Each structure stands twice: as C-alpha cells, then as structure tokens.
Image 1 (cartoon, rainbow over the protein chains, first blue to last red):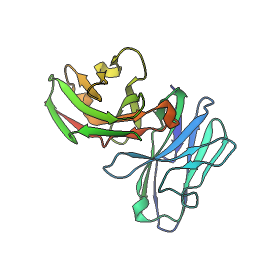
Image 2: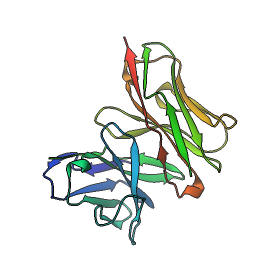
Image 3: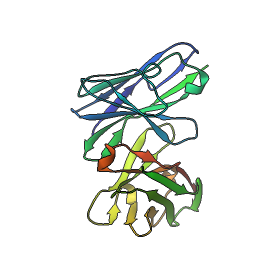
Image 4: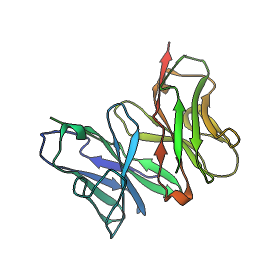
Length: 113
Length: 114
C-alpha cells in the first residue's frame, strides 16, 4: 500500500474562481489517478496523471476545466477551474502500487457557493 | 467495457447479524474485483481484492468475498456485524487490459441497528 495525503482537506470557494488540489504519496508510483465523487454518488474517474506527459482524460472531462500536473513520481495536482456550484464534490487521488490495485487519498471536499 | 451493479443502495442489519452486500459485474475479459469502504468524511479504504487464484478472498475487519464466474458475482459478507461497520461500501472492477481503470458500482450504505 501507500500513504497518500491531499491538501486542502476541504474548502469553500466562490463561483468563477479556481482551486488547486495537491496529492502527495510517500513512495514513487507510476500510476496516479484523479476521481470525482458528487454528493451521494459513486466515484467517477476524471483522468490519469502521467509523469512527464499530458494527462489522459475520460469522456466528459477536459483539460481546460481540470488541468493536471505530474512533475514527478510522488506528486500531482488537480485544478478545478472557473468553478460553479455543480463542481461541489469530493475529489480523490489514487495511486496504483500493486498491479491492478488502487489506494486512495483522504479526499478534498469542495463546496462552491 | 466493464460495469458493476450493486443490488440495494441501503442495507440495514442488526448488530451480530450476517452482513451480505451484493455485487454483480460485467466484463468481457477476466476481471479484477475490489471492495472498498468509505467511512463518513473519509477517503476509500481497500477491504479486499480478487485478481487471480483462490476465489474466496479474505479482507480486513472480518470481511470476505467470493468470486463466482458463473454468476458474475462478487458478494461481500461478514458473519457478525459490528456497529463500527456502518459505512458506504463500493464494489469496483478493472481489467489489466483496461489500463488499470477502476469502474465503481453505485455504492451500498450499510446501517447497523443496536
């Protein structure tokens, strides 16, 4: 497994602003992912954060709205841009340490007013 | 493409009773199957996983699940529920061919009655 931390743990933001969420893992990992969990819903994959190249986005998610950085094998950021109340969600990062097995961070709870 | 169906968005059991949370999957290739638990205001914790080998897998906190290929199921059980088991449980599937993408079910909220 891995120890994963996220910052901030929660935030309240005004519409039209942007928030950058950080994900730090205690060991080098190849695969890092970002998920969204809307209120009362399950998790949806936003993108795979690739080290040294552009992130791979899932259908319905675009780079302009959710830019992702992956400068090294232990760190990634997700930015939620030009926020609206519909972006209020929990955002979670995950890493894969064992083949096919993902471990999750504690999440960032975002409220947009 | 893979998909997961969790039968029952809410399950309520008495303390000490059997816990059974149902999960059915769809996959055209051999799946990797997972159960995660989410306690209030927390992230997801891996309970157990099936990749290959023994079809009955044991996880943390006394939970276990059995992979049944013929039924495309991966139900989660615990013989005796404890109050601390109250949480949201998610079943998920991936395949090695699926670039490690996890597809989640809708979740089952487990309530334990004293």
